[in-house]
Structure formats: C-alpha cells, structure tokens
Length: 76
Image (cartoon, rainbow, N blue to C red; front, side, top):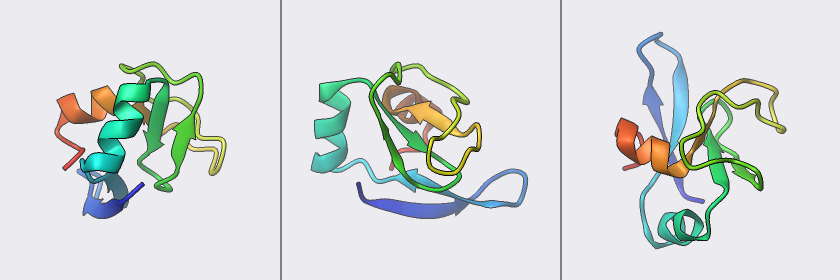
C-alpha cells in the first residue's frame, strides 16, 4: 500500500496511507487496518472502526481500521 509520512500532534513522524485505487481495493475487501507507527498493512481481524489495535509488525498500539482513517482525515 502506498504511504506517506506526516507529523503527529506529539511531534513524532508517523505514516498514513494514500487513498488511491489500491487503498480502495483493501477498503472494499474489509478487515484491513494500517499501522500509523510503522506503515504496515494489518490484514485479517481488523474492524473498519478499529482504533489502537496492537501492530503485529512493530508492537505499537497504532493500528486503525481503514474506514476509521478516512473519517479521521488521515487517509489522503
């Protein structure tokens, strides 16, 4: 999934997905999330409105459902 960085309110650099055709495909298939900390796609078992799930790749509680990222304005 295509991603870019942004500066969080805390001052820490994080990742966010770019809402393109690939993002749309994952969004429509459901149960995918995205880790804001490491930028990895979390597949399987992630609810659309998920917030602060633990990332299997980096261990941080920064996985959000793709629909939630859209509503938060973090998928651009």
